[in-house]
Length: 300
Image (cartoon, rainbow, N blue to C red; front, side, top):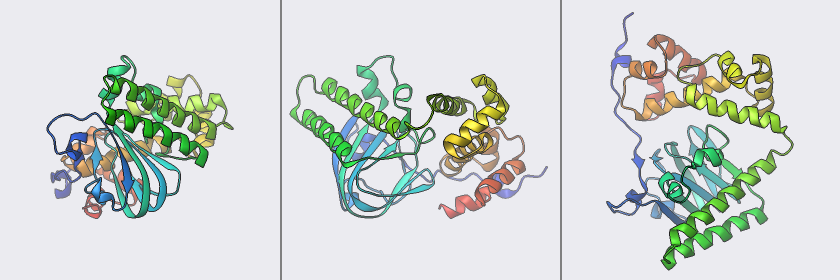
């Protein structure tokens, strides 16, 4: 089969990725930072209005303000007492932000693991990953005020320069993350614990296997349940079928790669397990209404 010119064309990387040190103009690695949010955001976060990625975790605590936050090709409205979660490599940008106030908390896995050897962010706090959950929490005012207390304590600890400031800070961070996790669980309290376990385990298995395994039967077998039961649980939990959730993760990765990998469409198709680039193009268009080339052009 002949491959079209666009399939063979190598698209340059378009979406920059920043490390924490890039915001401090220093060659030294930075593992933790906390700062206030205010308008204009460009004073704190350069290039906020253009798509970009981080190689660290960022949590944005929005106390007030309007505008939109674009995360992995979905748009979320800014509302008071909202917390947004970004994990490494999420594509995001801010648009039309007005009168914003709040805090931005940034840290990397290394900062956490130094104090909690053998533990990972993913194993304890997978809500931070957008492929596991929605990337935000709409909190109550009283809960948000608890977040603010912990953020203030972390900020003061870092400024004081105490001997054990990092040890104290990471424990405060862990307390904050558990409080966030607890409030997300509270929002889901009406859901069967068994259903929630199946959904979360499915999402973790999907993350490891989505490039090679697209059949619902594979995931049902891994969970030791029937295909029908898996689909019923996921439909109840997410409103989507097993196939829709598998395909959705493939499409998300395809979008990221099309805009950031520097690979040709043929190479991306092969990386995602498609032996035929024309089938990949049809699959992508069926799920997005765009051909891969049109998607790239629309996001230039």
